[in-house]
Image (cartoon, rainbow, N blue to C red; front, side, top):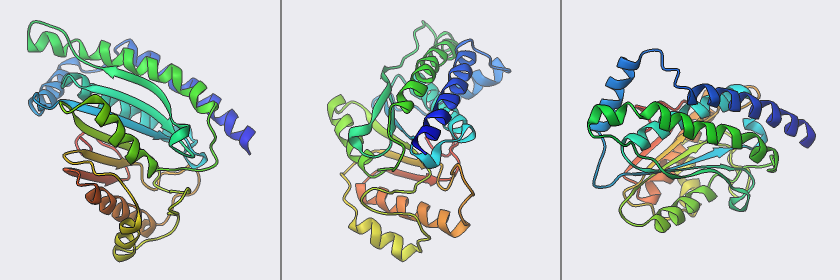
Length: 264
């Protein structure tokens, strides 16, 4: 089974690297439409507290499908674009069994140079493309070297707390957990949870305080196998919403599909 996972990762890694290369070439089909969207993003930036965007990608076995990884890479690209436009800091990592098995694909500030707003925004395709190229090329080898037998999602909250502490107080943490939501280490989440059960389980789960943070958990219920029942997905969303509120975050988003508008 592990060898099979390794073969899947190699295939997925090649696909992602190829897609990232296209992104680096700047293949926007409607530059004027994209510029308008970028201006809208810029208008929503908090320049006093730029985003520190921490993207954690789940590479456990249940996430090993090209469709899921492509969806997540599209989300990463949207997050990278927003981070660059808002002159923030981006880190993209892979995780599976534990916090000790986290591999960083990209870590650095993103900003757009230029004398005018339009000049800066026109640099976004190149900056984002280069960033995605780095991430895409690193994905396959990094994922191949990691275990895929389990998923420790809760540990990523602690890593988020530690990371924003290292960056200092001038950033706002934007934590993105791109995962199917099924936790298999420590707290077991693999069944339908009602609102009360979800709240009870979240109440027993230790998470750090993340005051002022924006926490997005996206991809809930999206697995490489048969899709789970709707009540299972609803329970996952309820659990992660409750867990997020427990951290003291300013905004909590727990969804099946990431969208730039739905997960800031």
